[in-house]
Length: 258
Image (cartoon, rainbow, N blue to C red; front, side, top):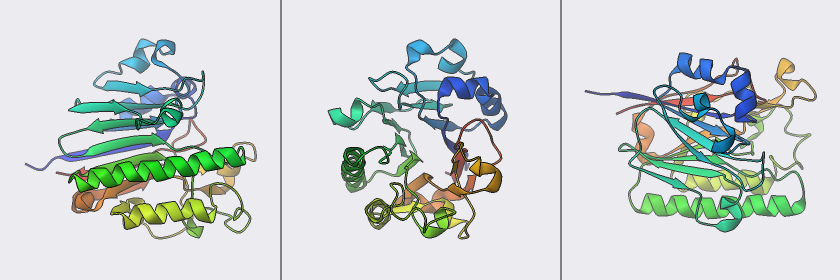
């Protein structure tokens, strides 16, 4: 019998702050099979029992050495066959950016990709991370893995993926070399799930809070689910949940049928 699997991804801009704004109530209502969170800004010792062990879920965490920075968490109803933390590269793994879950149906990467806006060095770091991450994905594909990648990629792919492309053409997050990496990812054998169902503009996942950009929908689509070509026939839906508050990002989701 076919089964549906629903995955959600959300940059919560602080898991403890999101919890105060109703994260766990939303999780109970939405009840995804897997929820991937980015920018958790906490290690497990700083979390209460409700966040460590939500009813019906097994939680895994990867956190940065620097307090209150970066971090990812994955909540899954079904236990993974194997869980990995990081890419095996110290300069990335020190920032707690990657959790990998091997499920029977697919290999899932929950990733908080670096932001390159702070300095030229951070942009170089971001581009190194992109390149090394793609190398890891290509190895997975070579082994015949069915792969799902989700998270805050910190780059808008095309002009229709942000409200003001011309004004941001020289800003990290929309630089040609950053956008070209997404092209290479797709060429390697991945699909942007949202664009399998929606080809128009005006759909964003992040808005600047300082300028209250969300009220005017002046945003960027920088959060993604990518799936390897072998999974595309199983993909039955993809969505942006821009009505969900609690962060400067909104959740995104995909649905598979196995």
